Image (cartoon, rainbow, N blue to C red; front, top):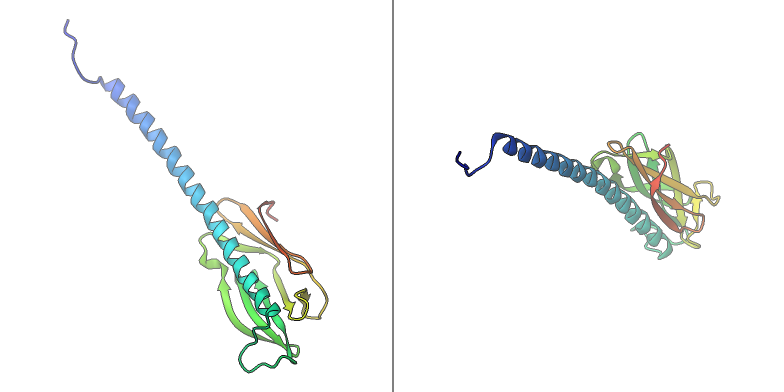
Amino acid sequence: MKNRAGFTLIELLVVITIISLFIGWSTTNYFRQQERQSLQNALATVRSHIDNIRLGSTSLLLPEGVSLSGFQGYGFILNSSADTLTRFYLEEGTSNNLNILEISKFRNIELVSPTNASVYFSHSSGELLDLFGQTAGITIILKNVVLEQCASLSINELGIITSNDQVTCP
């Protein structure tokens, strides 16, 4: 009996099966990591916008044509139905919109909580206030709808921002 060089059909099928399983596992993990990164990118972008809003208030970067005596600070409006964060400045009790961050531009990310909120940073103290001038704290929760995973930003009354990428989705 001759010893033939090469692979048998069974050996070839076993190798193809192992390679297919490895590729399937790798692809699944790759896409899951992409979704996690999308949530982290959205959280970092929202935090960056809020940091800029807070710094604009405390460093007295006044909008063009606004006097210091009427300027109260910069703030933001969260709208979960539109998945937006709208930046505004408050002048003598009147809010004036500046720009809008569309959270929906991040793939599979939505704003879960709060449903609607309007707060601003006081230019004199840097405190986070509601539109009635009362100190307020707020927690913003973003959700990746594919992974069913949430991350949050919490802003306390003093304007200090903390983030948590492992929170329970509401």
